[in-house]
Length: 114
Length: 115
Image (cartoon, rainbow over all chains, first blue to last red; front, side, top):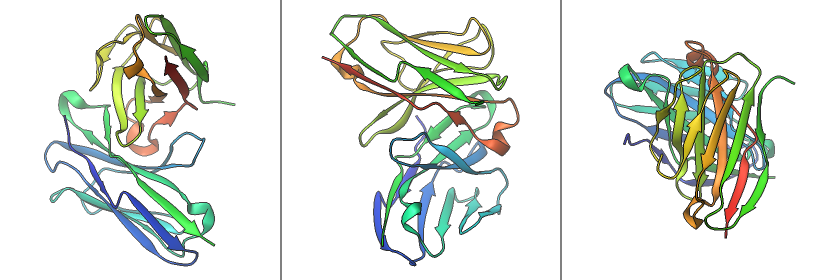
């Protein structure tokens, strides 16, 4: 069983604050690292998929970085808004015989207070 | 709308009863997955399929069976439900090779309670 850890488990910030969370994953047999946003009562939606060491992705105020050699990824949200409140999941994709499967972390629950 | 459709959305079963959860996708995706989501546990892979007629075990397969007779459908069966199978079940799909760019597409979930 692969170990994918996310920290912190939950986070409360004020509107306008910038924040970041961490995803740790195995540094061997890396294939891809996914980030998903999961709003209450909805399905997870893909934010980013990263495959190369040093990858940086950006979508509006949200960005992510990837370090495959040390096995971590950061998700950044600049100027948080109440609509950013959600659970953010990362998922690790291994290569070889595990290709196509993702192992998810437990998620970081973000609450942005107006 | 294109996507992944799960039925039913809610179900209450008595211990020992059986049921089948249906997942249907209209995106011509090769890969399909069943996950369960429990508080504090995250999403855990039950079974998955890499193409029509194929299935494989995931992290927590015990007590479940699956079938992929048609490319667009992936069925999850509980032969004899147990309270430990109370959970929210999510189906997802992805396209071979493209999942590295687009990620998984998830269904809306099935909330199952076994009493």
